[in-house]
Image (cartoon, rainbow, N blue to C red; front, side, top):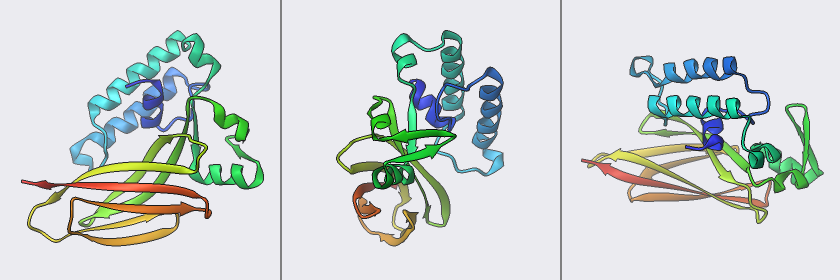
Length: 192
C-alpha cells in the first residue's frame, strides 16, 4: 500500500491538511466499521486500516519525499470532472481546479454509486487514474452462491440496473454527461 492508496482508504483528498489527530480519529472510525459485530459490509480489513494509518503517519512525519511534495495527490469526483470539461473549472474544497490541474501524475477520478447483491447493500467507491481520453474502466469481483438465483441491482450515474446473474460476469457501459464512458466489469466467482 502506498500513500495514495492509504489516502483513498481513509477518504482524504490530500496530505496537505493532515494531522496526527485527524489520522488517528479516522482510524478509530474505520476500525469500528471493520468489526463484525457492527454489521457494516466493508471491502477492507482491519489490517488494511492499520497499514494505511502507519503509512499516513510516516508520510506526515517525513513530510513526503521531494517528488510527492511537488505533486500532491488529487482526487476528483467524476461529477466534478464533467464540470471541468463543460465549464472549464470547478471549485472543490475552496480550491479551483481546471484542465491543467489534472496533469498532476497523482490525479485519480472517484466513481461512486451503490449496488445490492442478493439483497446485501454495498457502497461503490472506486478510483482510477485520470486519462484524457474520456474512457475509464472499473473492475469489481464478487462471490455469489452456487445453484441459487443471484440478482444484482446497481445505481450509478443516476441510472439503475437490475440484472439476474446467469454468467461469470456483467459488463455495463455508463455514460456521464454524454461524453465520458465508464466500463464497469463485475466478475462473479461461485461459492463452493
